[in-house]
Image (cartoon, rainbow, N blue to C red; front, side, top):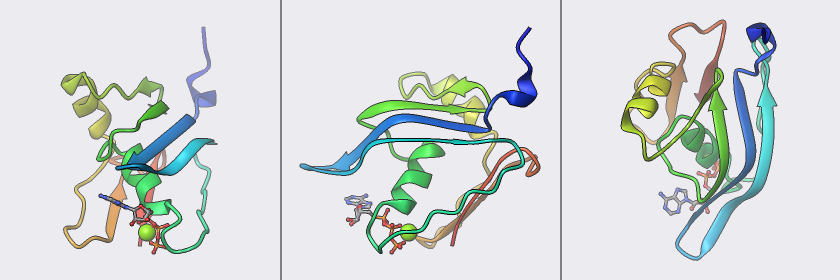
Length: 112
Ligand SMILES: Nc1ncnc2c1ncn2[C@@H]1O[C@H](COP(=O)(O)OP(=O)(O)OP(=O)(O)O)[C@@H](O)[C@H]1O
Ligand SMILES: [Mg+2]
């Protein structure tokens, strides 16, 4: 039986996200383990917020897989996305947003 404690909180594979003719993220992969804190550093406009917004389901990716707490994001499956959405709080309507998991010890995202 798989050990669920070893399942990454967030797993991103080969993620491509873009707008119009431009790809902002191109083949990005990362894992965040439970209890791990990952900081994103990069130039303004480099795609940090786009990555986080894609992870929580606000932007559908062009390619790639996102698995949250073992559940794969499927943008064609509203029920599945609602289930995954239970991990996130409500975005603060100000461009900048803070997203907290209902159980922050397992998974939390902040973009501030
Ligand atoms: N909804 C959108 N439609 C079109 N382009 C977008 C959209 N959202 C973001 N972009 C573009 O995606 C790119 C990445 O933006 P993003 O906000 O992710 O950058 P960032 O790394 O978070 O920057 P900052 O450090 O300033 O917060 C930018 O070129 C931005 O203009
Ligand atoms: Mg940003």
